[in-house]
Length: 398
Ligand code: PHB
Image 1: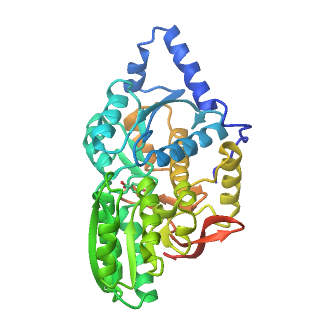
Image 2 (image 1 turned 180 degrees about the horizontal axis):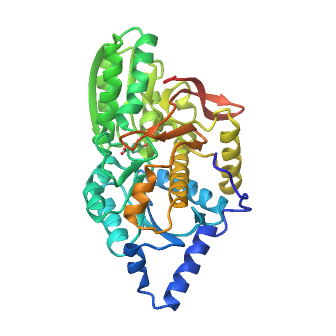
Image 3 (image 1 turned 30 degrees about the vertical axis):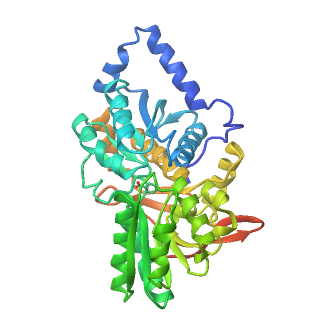
């Protein structure tokens, strides 16, 4: 974990980052206000303006809350500075999908003139803003969206999270070895769900697994999964693999259990049981096995320190979403450290040269496509000392 200068006493109070932002905004106002746009394009030396675009509404709102917390925790641990530069954060609501997320991102680039954007949960939104960012020469540090085609080597796209296909693919071979019989595939019907299933299927079939059938549920509007679960049940599958996250994950898991599927082993990309959704699912989630690049139960000093700081600050356990945003701040910290003149182009270039990040998830670094080269874990929902948690069973990609 990046060294922390000090721990915040209470992040429930106004964060230091916000205080820094207010101070910076007032000093800019005092010298004529409009100077921000020229600061944004020509390159500042002692400050950086960051657009934090995550959902504050819609099915992925809880993910946005965790990401904001992770990002602000890192800033608070570093005196509101990244790479020795004062940080001003401009927040915008990504909402549920591209119809809200694209204008929110465009606004922070064109109106607020941020020098870098952090966030974006939804794959469709990320794909929708990709070209604008590259054209505007404003880097995006994607702290969640997993769209496989998002990072194609564009100098302005960097990702501290995962690829959808990559998460699914790490699990397929294990499931093929563990389950005797065909597996049914189900997912939310948009880029993330389809790619997650495709990745799983690739390694599952390569390891000799047979698919019993597949079905996709309309994203954001499905509240009744029973017609789809009927198909899975009729297929006589020996197990099911799914991709659901946020509010969809809660509904799905509860209905899977109450529909009489509890005895059919459920496998998933780990978002299904991550964080607040697990609490809401309750006992219905017990026994679900997932693949993910984090669990707050990882037994390392780096993770234990992070969990303690996060829990103290927010009275809640951290999630993968919080870690991805915490690491986005860590990556920018390392990149900005190298810069005298801060602008979109210089940040994008410096991100290519930061080396390894010592994260709560374990060490990772950007690969040639700007995605994290990182550990993945097989996890199982268990009762851990009276609380449901994602117990780590093994590392999948050793
Ligand atoms: C995505 O749209 O890429 C996505 C959204 C939520 C998740 C994971 C992936 O939990």
